Image (cartoon, rainbow, N blue to C red; front, side, top):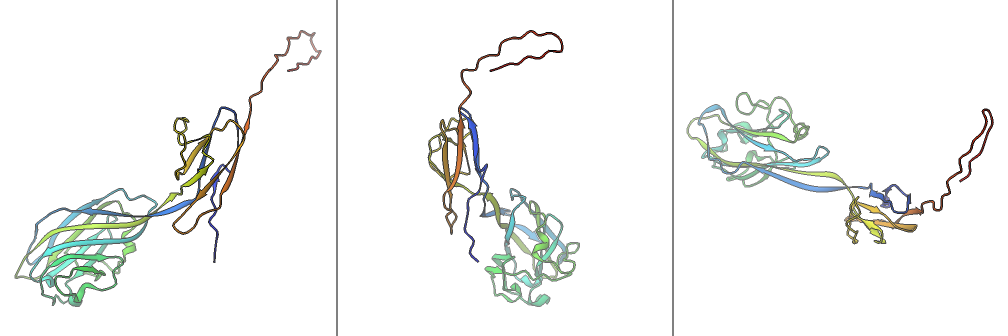
Length: 286
């Protein structure tokens, strides 16, 4: 199906009095892809050996628009540990949803005893389960999502998907890590959360002609031909403006926006006073 891209402007036409102005705004929406990264910085936090409660660390996420459509969530961490099969690692979203990222590895048996997670990313777009990955597991993986796995009091309950974490994006995201076997302790060196999203925004366009157009309501900044969403038209004579909107794929044909200029009434002659008897009538002419 091929649909032409057509510009839309509010209002589509206007009539103004000479000396006044009219705001013209493009109403087409455009989706901009954005990526926001939030990092813990250097931590160096010890993960206690053989401690089912483990540690929790928090990263505050802010600034994601309320109308954002989330395309991916990535959690990256660096953990020094000589037997990573001891570890359960869970992600807790601001809405309280709890997802198991790493569940003891090797199908939950803890058998993967090689060392370290180095720049390990668990992503909502990952396709390879981290369970059997070789040390130091640098790369992007899918979450294990093992029900009942995780630090005590912070286990995944039932089946949890990435979509369950997305109802509230801004707020405190937490990583919970516990070591379930004796013999060695680890160190959470750092971790971060990366949110990729699209946020519907209003499109911009190139307007012409530029005479009588301004970029501010006070009519102090003349429009110079750059792509903007809104202009203020204050022509002194009737003018048909046009706008062209371009995306990465398509360009609209010029959309005409007629602005009719009416001149103030001149040479107004005041009607004469009139005196009449009660119940009679009179007329006034201007």
